[in-house]
Length: 299
Ligand code: ADP
Image (spheres, rainbow, N blue to C red):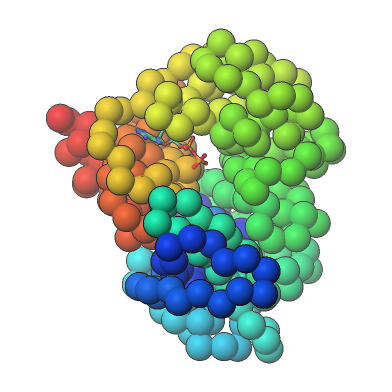
């Protein structure tokens, strides 16, 4: 089983010609809501990738809370341990201009009420992989990692959104997955550019965590672990929307590792999932299934 401890949001998306100035009112169009949040996206990605997934998160008492819960259930995710609290669920306000650039405000809402004491030991029993991101309070993330380690699972941290992390924070993490920008922040240095610099950054991160993957968008990804290091090129596709490529990648990686696959072959599947996610609009709607990735890999 894969346990995801993380955020669940509703994304509220509206299109405008240009971003509004302070005090200004603009008319938008095509308002839409989409289930999102890195935790939920990666849980859905892992479930579609063939994993058996349990989601630990916190939803509010608003109608978004009920809708988001229902969506996770429809993807076959075990929602039994999701906490409900009085008040709003997490939302992201996304404004997209005519050039396709977005500005985003995240109101974490109930996500910030997922506390270390909500993580019961029994939840972690029998799990193969724990998958974490940084959209719920850091003490909760660290407690989940500690519990996961204690239960003998593989603890994966996707350190997004970017923030600096003490060596202590990575103590219970087995595999760190970051993009080049996040790698720079964690290392407190300039973001690596290109494959050579990314491999060097991965080796620096290896001083704090045993396995590292750095994703490089359309360039692919690099990895380093106790067995060595390597580069996995990206698959050539026609991208229409790169939202959630990272989430598709991480979810597929968790699912393959939970099946006992080694890191390098698992990264090939993850790269295919990331590439396929860019060929469709939206976050969760674009997350591919195991069968879709399998036929893509078969060419
Ligand atoms: P994030 O969204 O977290 O920044 P990346 O953009 O690095 O993540 O994407 C994660 C992975 O998805 C990449 O390592 C790559 O394998 C795949 N990917 C992302 N963008 C593309 C693209 N334009 N073409 C092909 N594959 C892509």
